[in-house]
Image (cartoon, rainbow, N blue to C red; front, top):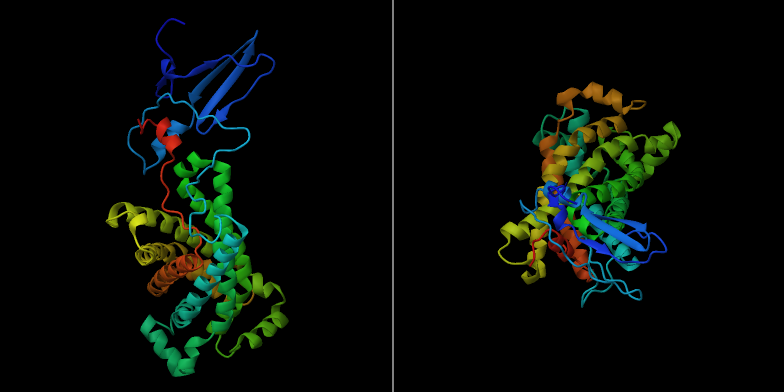
Length: 406
């Protein structure tokens, strides 16, 4: 066809690879990541025209990619019918020598869930005194004016043992939450990665982390809600109940089963943004630390050095988590204290300034908490010799399509 070359995005027709000569008996459809192949059958000849659709846009929209790309004509590797080519996902890896199990195996998920129990249950229980003061500052700011004042008033009224109120529901509730949060995160991360494919998993890895963590937290909050309601009732209503065994039957007798789940929607409002920030920020911070801060590749770092990077990335993620989730946390605290209130009523009552009460205490608590959780979780993986994939790298097939390799 004469005339100027037609453009498909930034690619001229002369750059498009046209393949001919397949079976004339039926139409065939070929497709691979980021490239659409249209096939048309006519009189014993089949013309397959390949052109880029979304790959160029995805690559250029990625803020962490190189600024300029040029598509190159590449030969796609042939796959055997008897053996599929091993696909290494950006968020996954095959079991290496020394690993106790395969990545994504049942044992892997079980041990990740166990790591979540240890990381969330122990850390939240350890900061119960700070959590107690934070909750009391949220529901009674006129009495508990600051962190120091809150500790002083609590010790004066309840003694030192009063700082440990609510430890039992905290341990049980957050252990169950940790099981679902970390366990399901690994499940959903692999599930969504398989749906996207290797190349799109790399290009959309931040979105994958956000989607996987949000999905996991949805179920984790259902597991957490009953014990969270009990914990807040013990901590914020002096004289109501001092122990888990006293509080549960009393709440059930007064409000029924709804007493334990009326805070689940505010929990989703608080925890889902928190967890999305926690996982996505952590994953990308680790990636950035190894790329720009750590003076040697991750493969050359010792296990202890890798755990230090994990702790630092966890603390950075925790600060952002606290800020994002604090307004909803204030609503949950007041909602579980007051009978018959709704989340909207509490939000209206607190106002724009009231929802930020106790933020400094929460930043200290959540920053430390998140750093310790990631440190413990990663330590569990090291102890049980679970696969720990390195930060994601661009797949070779994508590098070829973008012209980044010879």
